[in-house]
Structures are given as C-alpha cells and as structure tokens.
Amino acid sequence: FTVMMTDPIPPQYFVRVISDKWLGSESSLPISFRHLILPQKSSPPTELLDLQPLPISGFRNEEVEALYKGRSTFNPIQTQVFSQLFNSNENALVCAPVGSGLDVCAEFAILEAITRIGLPTVKCVYIAPYQSVVKQQ
Image (cartoon, rainbow, N blue to C red; front, top):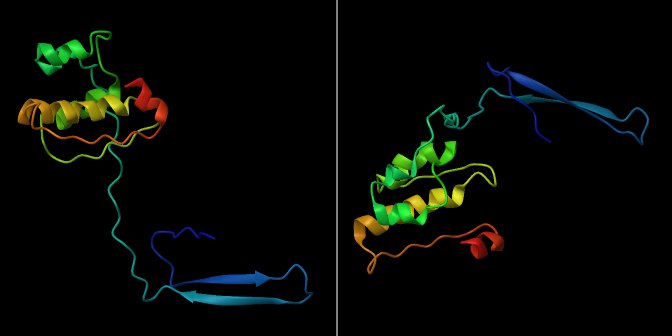
C-alpha cells in the first residue's frame, strides 16, 4: 500500500491493523519518521508551451523538407522539441502520449545525425514501441 506524505513531514504515523475474521484482533503500530531520508525532489515535467506551429521549412534543407511533403507544419510537441533534437547533438528524452508524433521527434534526431556525420557513416537505432509503427515507417 502507499501512504501520501504531507509537507512538512509529521514525526510519526500510526498504522492501525484490524482483522475482519477475528473479533477484538487489532493493533496500532507507530512508524517514526525521525530518521527518514527522502530522495531529492525531481523537477516537474516541461510544460507544453503555446508556440506557433513550426513550418516544414524550419529544416532549412530541401532534401529533408521533401520527406515531409504531405504536411505544412509540425504539431505542438514536435515544434517544442525541434530545436533540441535537430539543431543540437545533445542527449534528449521526450515523453509524450501515444499518437502525439514521437516517431517524428525521433526522426529529427536521426536527421540531425545524418546531416552532421554524413549518410554513409552514420549509424542510428530506432526502437519502435509497436510493430504497426515499424510497418508505417
């Protein structure tokens, strides 16, 4: 079971255990938090910014833009991560709901590596979450 911790942390909690099969069988146990060591608080997730949709011309490369000839702009998640994934070779972790265009975000990073290193020597591995995504690409 999980118990939510309030802030500030109280000195102790009492856990009361009651049997539903034995009459009068109950116990109360104190749990002290005096020497409790908590992990550091993690930073909150990045908020989705209200940005103008990024046009396909954001690549500034006609060969790459030709890959996306069926669309005119990217969605909000793709717009927000584009600069980090395509204009930088830093590591990045992008978490978003299924169906929000994460495969295109992965393509940004792959295309960055291709334009920086060159097609004959670049090696990329993309692990798709579903076989349908692999067939689609």
